[in-house]
Length: 343
Image (tube, rainbow, N blue to C red; front, side):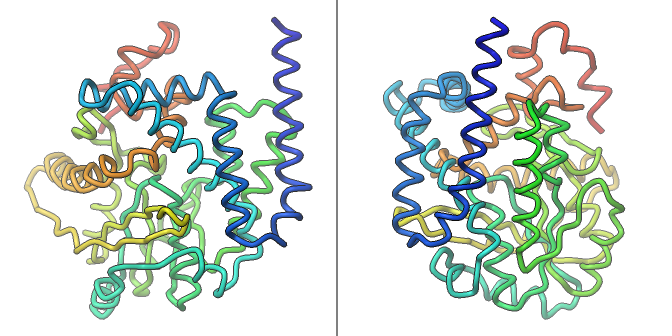
């Protein structure tokens, strides 16, 4: 068993090395059309050979869709998920060399008028996103247009502490990803740092990208998301109330030609309650309902998040979905009370 595990780890490290070194230099010279064709093919291959990940993704989709989709439909969504995940992954190699012209070929934005109107108010904008599609492409898409944009995020190197990196090459890959995203025309506010920079950028009438399903902060509220009890962050409510910033939900949708359609929604108006907990729950649920509509149209764009949340369920202070705790975590991982952990 140990020998088999060592061989698997060695194979993964070889693939990481190929991806981050030879591929990184070769891909910068290729046309986007060719890059997406290669990455799509690689995704299909991974669908067939990555059995454990495929199984988890299919299980997650089955839990969400229940009997509304047949087995072959779920498998088709899972296959498209792998194609999309590998396209997203390959795009990371393009980050350091992104230019205004290349980003224009990769993205287009709908709803810019909503963003511009919100900025005219002078109190900043919270662009409320999720780990849906290539959500990071919002930053170069707006940054190269001259907008001052910030992102609350976790360092890729910190993800290793959560998910448990397997080797030195795995840690090196996370460092390379961190260095790649630093090339964006945007500022990262990492969740391990003080939250004051987030408030400051809004008071300076800048844009702050914030993921409701991210790991930032300690607050979580339980909402109904995709027909399951989920624990999402209400931090956007606290920031908006502290600064008067406008909240604009935004979603990144990969098109059939592999370009990213960035869609900015109408402002999310907060409903005020005397009870802060109810306020968090109501307004977070409002976003969850908006997000759910996008998920059911493009479920493959959320597969990577569903996979990652399942894989790290036993390590998270609070699981993303409550049914992880009930169904998937081994008994030794059930060390906490959900009621105690959720604010």
